[in-house]
Amino acid sequence: MAKNHRLMPQDPRMFRAEVLRTGRVSPSIQRLTVTGAELADFPWRGYDHWFRLFLRLPHQRRLRLPEFTGSRWWHPFLAIPDGERPHCANYTVADFRPEAAEMDIDFVVHRGPTGELEGRAAIWACRARPGDLLAVLDQGILFDCPQDASEVLVVADETGLPATAGIMRSLPRGTVGRLIQEVPTADDRRDLDAPPGVSVTWVVREDRDSVPGVAALRELRRHTRADASGYAFVVGESTLATEGRRHLNRIGLAKDRITFSGFWKHERHEALQPA
Image (cartoon, rainbow, N blue to C red):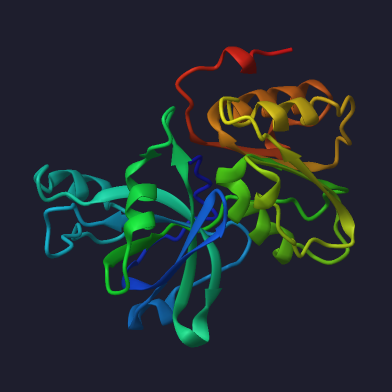
């Protein structure tokens, strides 16, 4: 993920937790609810608040975490021997209930050519059971809408859905703009608490062989003019993020009014070449 140090915690805290319950909320999304006494103090800020997720390795009985002070967690993490170093991945808070010390985390269920599960974190999430251990490292938010923004445009594939859902419910109710949200199937659509002035466009991919992000980028390119005082947030597959930013800048939105982040990278990009 791209970083805005102004929006990141200066001394990020690690929170230990365990799985409370699991469930499939749509064909492509597995949701885990996690809890723990420490989570009651998680400084949730709404919007696209994200974190580093730490999982123990399959052969481990305990979760070994890096010991660090301040924001310098990376080198202590790498110093843990390969056979003991936990798996680490980036995720967004899908929902948070501080009074119950409960956090929801949504995992996209990726499948390979023959239908097998792909991605270590997604495989873990689909097999997780109550009591399984994990930890989250607070990383703050990316969404950085200027106070003078005349409109807001948000674009994402399914990996960005927890972020866009959080942004929609956190935006001031007077916000105007548009959300372009791509999902694999029609049943992955959900009700979003968007402000009345923000239109929501669901782009359904359907074809399992289509490269994620292509359809959202195609819909974004229908915008031929951008308000120079607007703001855009484009996340998901890396080429959707970079090409989306390039298009928005080309039609009149300054780079410093665009937040973009490639959450992941597809192995082939032929269909995502610039128009």
